Length: 111
Length: 114
Image 1 (cartoon, rainbow over the protein chains, first blue to last red):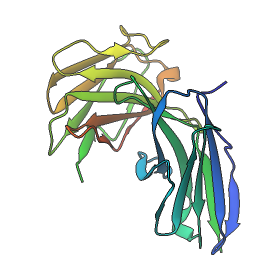
Image 2 (cartoon, rainbow over the protein chains, first blue to last red):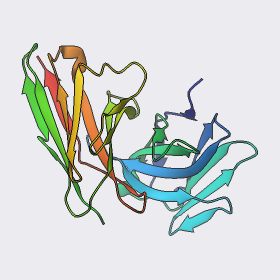
Image 3 (cartoon, each protein chain N blue to C red):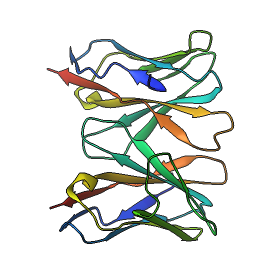
């Protein structure tokens, strides 16, 4: 079983739609959680950190459920520019600054 | 935000040759840098942790004699792919960690071995 699992998609949604991605992680010693965005042939860029109480940044909302070892990302009012691969990333306690990446979920926002 | 550069951006080389990739933190010092590899439609896989002034720590399954890492200064780490083969063709990405433990990624180097 992979340490961080995501549905690879692709998710094709119309512009303006609301879309949610899920991620599960297997190591209960996980300490920090992030969502990264990666465009084709580019490096990943931090979208947002995920906090236990849930957090929002504009159209993006992240949720964490430690009991279920589950992380989610909600995107409201999708834009064409949101088309990318979204990577769920976990940092483990005692792992230093090492990050473990999920395989990513591809989103395509269409007209 | 902090900037990390990588050179070259892309490289095409013949099988059997060696290729060096540089990773630089441009406006901060990084005692730790990471090297990742990403194959098409797959996630980033950590190859090794590069620590300034000491030997790199390699992840399981990564050949340390094939992927030579040197972290000679607080702003530079290099990855040398020795005797490259077509299966080494991939997207190599580095990241650098600043004093606040924030991790910044380089733009990546696309290696194609013919």
